[in-house]
Amino acid sequence: MNYALGLTLLRVLLVPVIISLMYADGLWSAFFFALASLTDWLDGLAARKFAQGTELGKFLDPLADKFLVLTVLILLAVQLRIEVLPVLILVVREFAVMGLRCAVLEKGGAVVAASRLAKWKTAAQMLALFLLLADWPFGREVFYVSFVLAVISGAEYFWAHRDSLK
Image (cartoon, rainbow, N blue to C red; front, side, top):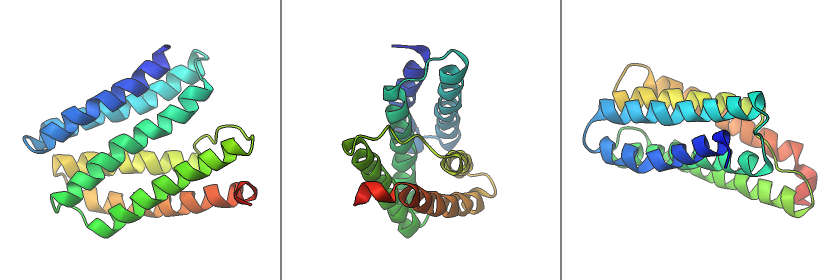
């Protein structure tokens, strides 16, 4: 296992810590969420800078992001700190994109890497969730910006890979 994959796995392992802290202390949950979010940036940096990019990493990195982000979004909705409908739409979007990735692989294509817009979406989501967890201003506004980016980037994925769905 290389450094980049280790950081991806660390992100997954931090999710139960964040969940526990969401019921105990908002600032600590925000801190550990920020730490987990930082691993997303660092694993990408390690993959590029140290040539540690792998097909497995391209596949696992977005899954780790989904696990982290969707878990926190769902819990924020359960705690009534954010509206349920956009969270449900995001869950459907993430599973649809994951299904698309599988369809592309099944047709003999390469792993569908995250698009530039999807990377911006992820960054905006992580900032929004940090702000919401810390109960700081503008969390909802940033969340809705990330929501719009998610819808657009989801459509972008399906448009770019529409031939794989035939």
